[in-house]
Length: 410
Image (tube, rainbow, N blue to C red; front, top):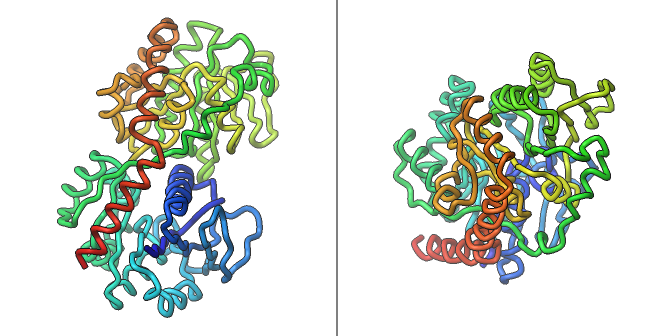
């Protein structure tokens, strides 16, 4: 089976968060199971220089990075990535593949791939990854809805199937856009082998000595409006005002200078922060918040292993890769009921679920901090859930079955 994966950005464009990691993980797992996977993408978000317009191999996956025109980035809400060379490759090489798997919605690579799939009658699956959530569309809705009715509606309507990563995503997107496509509901997965040898709990405090002796709360994700950092800072400010043994670690990359708003909220709560991401540190004797910047691989595992609670109070989250990673590392998780896997987590008693209010977050954090046995129970249940639900090998098997069904029904 020959699969072409078309995505606006790809490994190692880590700044785009969970989708980058989850897509690469499933592609690696598919390769190990004998599926031939090729990726067409653009070089957006790649910090180091990569070969353009030529195929390279990453973990057995054939990847081509195409340059894009920055002059047209104003067209789509998140950038458009128009690429003539990508268009040309799709035009002349698409018939080499049995199926095209398309990630995202609001980008040129998506519309170009969907167009040529329809032209050459190649089945294609769209995986929106939260991009058509009602809450996401509501941001700059006027621009997105114009784009949707002119371009994306046709691309989605003619897709052989839509791959959602949660039931919540499927229900909300189907209802809000009146979609009638065949649905594939398969979650993201993680390689559990990477969590067998995680760093010691002390590794985090060795790197950041000022955290020693503290109850460490970890937020790990992109620093943007969706993540609920405004209510998290307010909740944590109340907590830190009552006790001096807590510290909030914020790990992730900044989007559109949103970090400056977060820093202002910290100051408004009469707190200080260390910022290791920019080197611009406030050096008061007491700081309650630490910004680490973007963490990779072992650094990320170190953050999970060294933290007492992982917290993600998002206003909108189509999956939550960092939640699954935290559970696999044994870190108790507190998440909002807008993180799409919250129902599954609640059913398995694998995390503490709160509403998106600062008071609910405060009460949840306080309860977890005060109960070691509660945290330990969530840790055990979270590890089990990560193993039972999100093992990448099992996820790959399910994807292969779904791919074969789509190809068979053409």
